[in-house]
Structures are given as structure tokens and as C-alpha cells.
Image 1 (cartoon, one colour):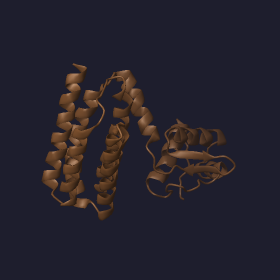
Image 2 (tube, rainbow, N blue to C red):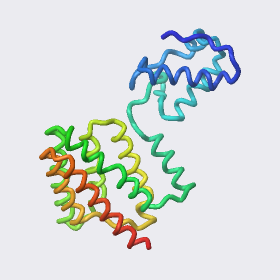
Image 3 (spheres, helix red, strand yellow):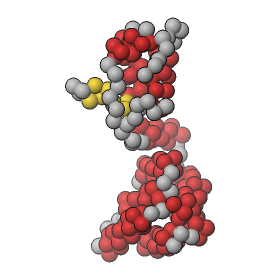
Image 4 (cartoon, one colour):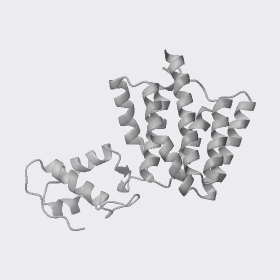
Length: 230
């Protein structure tokens, strides 16, 4: 690590950005332990208080995590902080389920097209297992909403694109937040039929067909929600 000394105003902001840059540049990866505070103090030539506050800020964003008795570590990949931020925005902006579904309509068809191009046999196995689980839940008279969301997660994973996976996770989290208060209908036979068709198109590596099926699936959900909350 080669950090230049900091001798400017707003030291906490500057130190926070410098440490963040070290992490984002790959000098530290998920699970790595950061050097002790005194090392940052010596290299940046700032007080321990400044370093401590900078680390606290990075922890608050979810980039760092503290393990008691062990020190400060780069957090493993998770989107908890992003989800919390989305939830807060929802409450402030009064976002409803329909807006979230429209976002999905804009993103998921393209995501599904990429999934049909990049999927592996393992992704297909997971999709088939998910569909089988939905069949069992519906047959038993139980809701399959959680399993439905998992289907969309698997499709996102099949893209092998981290940004799309994160975007899908955020959309699903937001939809879960607004689901109950806005009366979004539970998932049943109709969703299962769509999921089977989408899975088959992905398995057969038919990107355009998969994209159209996902578009039509979400468009149908949107229409149903519009009728429910009208």
C-alpha cells in the first residue's frame, strides 16, 4: 500500500475517499483485514480520530465490517446497505408496486436475453428445481411468492453479470417492501406457466424468445396489479 500524506481541509472526507479507493481498486478484496489504525495514521499523517471516523463512515456504507476482537475487514459481497437505502427512498418518495414492476419491465427482458446466451447447465438445473418447488407449493395450496422471486434471481445469475444481479436483487427487495401494503397478487399457476416457458427458452439458448416471454410475463403482472390497485 502506497498512500500519500494528507495535508488538506476536510481531512475525514479525504481519508475516507483514499481508503475507499484502495478497496475499490482491488488492493483489498472481500474478506481482507485492513491494516491497524496506526498504519493509516502514519502513512496519511493524520490523527487517529480522523482515521477512526473515516473507517466508521465506510462501515456505515456497508463497505467494511467489524469483527470483535479481530479488527476491520472488507465486507463480503452483499447488498444490505443498498437495500436499506432503497427502502428509505421508498418511504420518502411513496413509491408503489406499479412503479417497481415498470422498472422490472424495462430491465428484465434484456436480462433474460443475456441469460439465454450465458447460462450454464447448473443454472438450468436450478431453474428446473425452482419450478418443481413452485409446483409443490401450489399443489399444497401454499403461496409461492418467495420461490417466484428466487426464479428471477436465478435468471439474473445466469447472465453472469454482477451489475444485473445487483439490480435484480434491488428490484426484488423493493417489490417485497411494497408488496403487502399495495396488495400485489400472490403468484400461482399463471406465473408458473410463464416461468416454464422462460426456462425452456433459456435452456434452448433462444435469447429473443426468452426476452419476449419475460416481457409478456411482466406486462401481464403489471396489468393485474393495475386492476388491483385501481
